Image 1: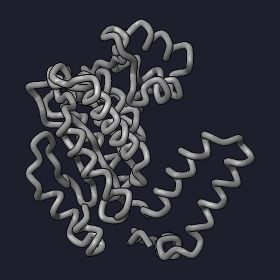
Image 2: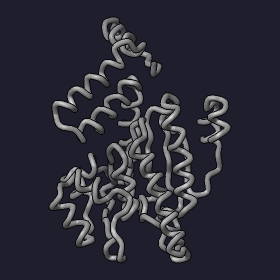
Image 3: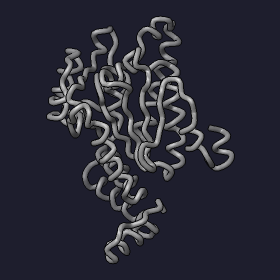
Length: 280
């Protein structure tokens, strides 16, 4: 990261795409769409410490260079698991101090996902349990395979959700249902996730990535500054009272009035052509 900062992040994305990660697969399946695949199939794509570090190393520069990629997809290898949460086999080897330090790093990584200025979509290809579901809940929205299953089952292990699950799930499904799901460690299906607002769409397993790429491509085709500002306004405005939030929205809107993309968008509409947005 230090060498990227020193030269203005020049070439960081190309270096990222060429990098040989141990726990992830990273590619650009469509122009300006970054796909991150959790790649630990023998462990149901569970997080270990290295996975946390590798995810962090991707999302950190995304907060600085906001134009190279216009949308991010997170998914898992195979069709059985999106992510089974923290790797308990690795954690069995950690003492109490190491456990706390590891979890603090996971928390920072999740916050980078949550606060990513670029839209992040979860493509939930299989089981999303514990921290895996919490990772998906940090994303802007999710599509899921019909075979996907979900659970925040930490209380059955003597702990509790610590990757934002008690907050993000409750905001989506409501306090009472979140309590039922978390306190009873109750699993739920893709259809239930759709009905409760945890996912936006349920797809047949073979169609999931095509559907996610289609919506990611649509997002990527629009003005990046406008997309980022709209995401920013929705996310932060929901934490405010309505009058403050509407003022916050106007301040976000005003940033685009003098942008090149706003001028290009209106001009292209009047000229009946596709706009060429540059993120400026």
